[in-house]
Length: 447
Image 1 (cartoon, rainbow, N blue to C red):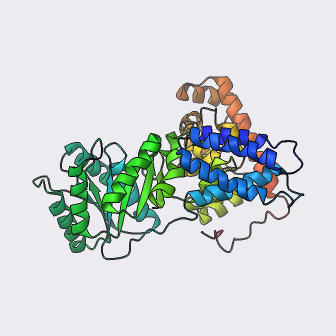
Image 2 (image 1 turned 180 degrees about the vertical axis):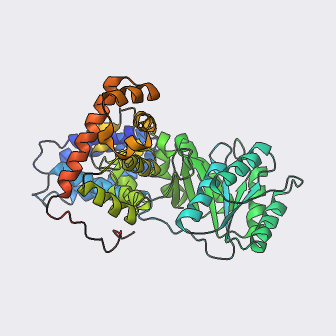
Image 3 (image 1 turned 120 degrees about the horizontal axis):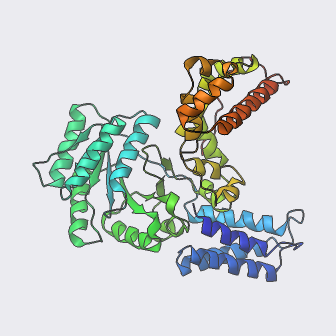
């Protein structure tokens, strides 16, 4: 995510390497490189210049202050604060109060509207304990209606569709009535898109909005289209005055122009960001967290939040007791792998850890990374999974044949597992690693 921008900004800060303090000369040189980095990221030149003018003004005001802080570190802090401000300052509210609340989804064809509608329904169902209804109002593409039906079935959310009607306003209103009749509390209306902005589409989405009076109108935009995304967002906002923006395909965008420019240009906040195709890859947009990631500082708060979503206190206590008795087995190992996989894309997760984004950016890390380990464990008998000490050379040969890996790979894995188990057991005996019952889960103060 935003690798090109991150690399260029790092180069801009390197201008200050070896300097003892910020001066007008080295500030100007660094700011020039920052402006180039933003323009290369497809940020409009006017926005880039205004941004760097603010950075320069703040940096000049610190020339004789904070001598204990290195100039490069101080410049990073200034740029980080300005990035946060440029992207909206703080996470925006999302209003789904009402019975039912109505969320209207708009955007161009191919922007990821229908997939986002499913992700939002899943988000509301799993994280906010809502009972959503998806309404299929794209009367022009039967494939869109079918896609929404498949998504709804996948996430366990009902989908309202009327294949006999070609009137999206009528379908939307009937969908809302269906939600009332079945006591569903959020209606998500997926509308039709076009290949480009046109009067017919704008009129239609405006009519739907006027009829359903949504709590939230969200404009979905493909972040990989850069400055074009910003221009389209402005055109839509001029007609339907939406509440917020959703950036999709953010994991494929190495530049970042859309994320950095939309709030400034349109005056509407980014409310959600979407990565990947899986239904659980939707996040509330936090400007401060994205700013730290752009600057290579990770996003440890989001990482911990994702870990907490998979945290099972009873399971943690059970594992602690097994580790202390040196009874950690392959079933326990599989359980931990599954929890990690549920947290999301592995490379994205590693990028949230401070310093890891630079290390992993050129590595081919994908969600199949655990397949080899899983294949080895699935080739074991139940007794072998429960008791790793049973596995001798004869059993290793059988396991190798079952999983399609050679004996050397099995030996290497078994050795690594044994070393890990011993280390975990040793750490459990250290002072402070008591097996007393934790009083509560870690509580994060949300911004």
